Length: 137
Image (tube, rainbow, N blue to C red):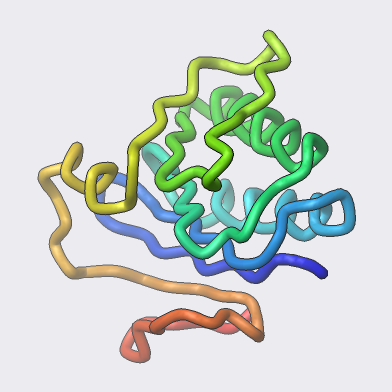
């Protein structure tokens, strides 16, 4: 099983949403999505895990690596709605990662939810799509 992703940009931040299971077989796909986020946005990246069914230790370490990559570019990673077990394996090498209980709480930290978004997603993204401004990966 792998993950599907959707990346949405706002003026001051971006949201990278995941669906599926972030296990060892999905780490390269996740890394590709993070690369997509790095190339197409600015500001903080909120990693929305609302649709994620779970993650392995390798998946959690990939999240820590994403936090490092973003920090190297002057950006930060925030988590929203981590899987039910509530764990994140800290490896001691990543910058602090703020955790929000859900996506609404993460979005509330930003005043600019202007509605002017641009969206990209993987082929089988299961959630709602912004048809006016989408790209297909």
